[in-house]
Each structure stands twice: as C-alpha cells, then as structure tokens.
Length: 111
Length: 116
Image (cartoon, rainbow over all chains, first blue to last red; front, side, top):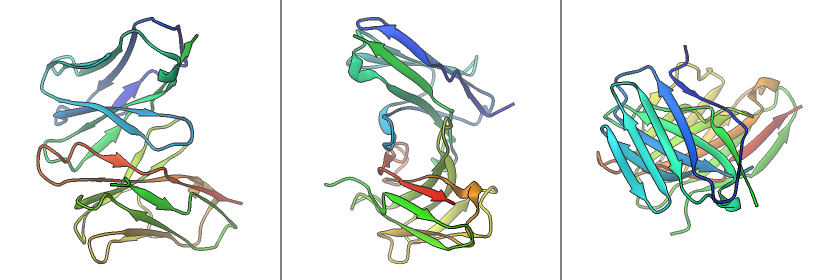
C-alpha cells in the first residue's frame, strides 16, 4: 500500500461546478497536510496547508482533514477554466522533514 | 523576491554522461529541497538542506546522485553516469525553517532531463 493514495482522474467538470478532490494516507505520523496546484510543465504551487482535523477556507478553496479516517479533501467552489491543472496533495511529519506527495488528480474545467 | 529559479530548464544528455543542475532558492529561505517527478506521479523527495548542512537523503537516492549547498545559498544536484531511468523533471523547493513556515515550500520551474 502506498503511503498516499489519490485518484489520478482525469476529472472533467463544467464551469461553475463544485469540485471535490481527495487523498487517503496510511502513516499516522503525518500531521501537516498541503494542497498544490501544478500546471503542465511548471513547478507545483502551494494552495493551502492545514494542521489538525477540521476545515480551512481560502477564497473559493476549502481544505478538510479527517485524521481519524486518514482522509483529506480539497473543495473548489465556482470552478473556472483557469483551475484546470493537476492537484497534488502532500503531507508531512511534525518536523517538516518527511514530505510525501500523492500522484495528483488531473482536473479539467470546461467552459 | 524573484522566487525559486533553476538552471537549465531543459537538458538532453547521452547515457553515461554526467549532468549538473543548479537551484537558487528564495533569498531568506534556509531550507532547500530536491525532488524528482516523473510523468503522472507526484514529486518524490530526494534530499534536503538546512543552510549548508544536508540533513536527509532518500533511501531511493542512488550513489550516482550527489547534492551540495556550499554556502547555504544556491545548491547543485549532480548525476553521474546517467541512465535512461534518470529521465524526469528535477524540482527544487525552498522554505523557512521555523516550525510554522517549513510547510510552505515554494517550488522552482524544474529542470527537465532527457537521457538518450
């Protein structure tokens, strides 16, 4: 079993839809959870990071963490064609030394 | 602040040759990370530095790979005797080292290596 699992997609949605992206993990040492967006042939761009279970909101993005289920989610409201990219979840131990990324979900938002 | 920069952006080399990549982190960041990313996969951790000290290396990092950060600023990643399996995007990221900031890693554009 991989440490971090993520549905690779591709996921296609119409403009304005609510998008739900998810990751599961197996290592209970992970305490920090990040979401990155990566456009084709570019480096990943940090969207959000969270610590502990619960929700964190930033504009159209909401990150949700459920440590008891080892499950994290990213919700995108009012999706736009410019949101079309690969979304990577990442997680880390408390010391910021062991970063593990999921394989990414490719999202297409159709106008 | 110009962000993390990497050079070159693309490198094509023949199998068996040595290659070296450079990363310039954000100036006030004292942590620097190297990752490798292949098509359809997330970045895979290779190694990281805090200032000039290399603190961790992935068990997956072959002896053909070496990284340096001599003055705690820019870093180089060298691959000796390249193999076709080394073809990938090599990403550099930097962050501050405080507990709350170390999770905010900023990535460079990457160096795409093709080994023929």
